Amino acid sequence: MPIFTAPQRRFVQAVSGIAHANPFLPQRIDYERQALGKQFEEEASDWNVNWESAGSHPNITRLLQLSGDTLEAARDKLLSGAKPQASELQLYEDLTFFALYHEYREHNDETVKRMFASPGSRRVVTYFQSFEERLNHYLRVPSVSEALTLDAAHTLALFFQVRRAFFHIHGCLVGTSAPAARLRAMVWQSIFTHDMRRYRRSLYNDMGQHTTLITGPSGTGKELVARAIALSRYIPFDARTRRFAVDVSSAFLPINLTALSPTLIESELFGHKRGAFTGAVTDRTGWLEKCPAHGAVFLDEIGDLDPVIQVKLLRVLQTRHFNRLGETEDKHFAGKLLAATNRDLNEAMSAGSFRQDFFYRLCSDQISTPSLAEQLADRPDDLTTLVRFLCQRMVGPDEADRLTEQVVAWIGQHLDADYAWPGNVRELEQCVRNVLIRNEYRPSTPQVNAVDPERVLVQQFMGVQLSADELLDAYCKVAYNRLGSYSAAAKQLGVDRRTVKARVNRSSPAETSMHDNADD
Image (cartoon, rainbow, N blue to C red; front, top):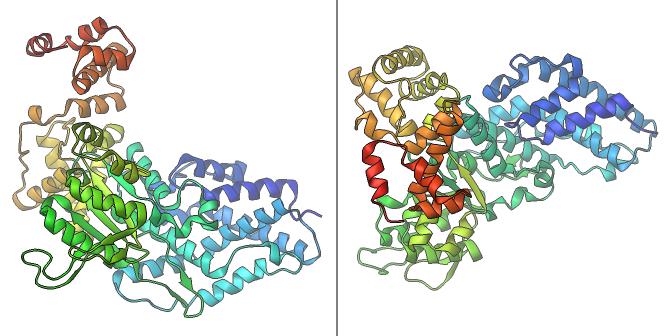
């Protein structure tokens, strides 16, 4: 006897998709649309923009009501002796997962906020007993309980991780543009992978084995991406003590490699024994050793790392072992490694300054951060959103709106509408500070010199500002500049060399002369 009618089964299948979908991809909203049918409200349905209001959205409210009713009806059939197939039991478990996640969402949000408001504390989770009872209410049903796999402690740990991920992704990555949404989706996958079912079954404790490489222009928030991933890692829950195993609020350990000499980098990373080098007057524990199993070390500007240290880090990535300077005893790295660079690592490998074997160990998971120009080309209104976010951090919520209005008005009056923001969000932050203090901002270089042609091309492409002919001209110039010759560009683009040369030379006289005199 089935426990779901045909319409109920279709509804639960859609809810199962919701429970395991990447919330920052359109697929998630499609599942909601499938589940609710004609009851789905299109207006403001993309709660990706404002996740804190998701729980009160009419679509979520209807989903929770229908889920609760369907779940109780199915439970009654199980208690009456229904013998469902394995596929139905899996749907029943997924429906329980979805319903209880939302039932305890606010409890978990409060725990997240307390953890980061009081670093170092591991408070008793007072609602665990209630949560366990509710889970058992649905899963500990005679004759089928042994086939259901949700464990109370593990499930609560997953719910808590999901809420932390929302908290940090939205807290660090602001904007409503398509590039910003894609970035949030990529960060979510770096935390949970693309398959949430597999993650909750087996991968939740193994993601530290996979290094994340974050690339993108300077000033685009690569460290914020790393922070969001590091602080959203899985933390086991101890049902006996009713506490999470560790406090994750201080488990993000960043190192800016360009700020240190090679010797100091080694000391910071690996630690050293007293007397290992001049100035090593005491033993030192490095950050790889300090990093807890559920923490992460972030190496910023990895593209500038000395090749000798690349070899030592390669060993860490391959074996998870390392030695302190001046010692032979093996130490174990238990955490996750995150790295970032604004350099083109393919060029660095070609030049011999970056090891290929090290690169392939770094790039098991890659994220690319978009430029500010890309975001604003897609959604110009995001300028106000980003300025408000920066103002809130600088002057607090009470003064933020007034300062935002002042900064946006100043930008509108003094900078061109298509100003490229070559320094990205970091430059925008300095603009806000300058306007706050002096009521003016002066870009460090003239706009005409600050514009990156490739960045402008991306902006024009996203804004659908080019004809097909202009787009091909610009693309040929990019290929020529990157590859260094007409022949190489022609081979890459699959066209005749003369075609590339003609399109590259549709430029200013100075550029034409420069191209004509170039070796090919």
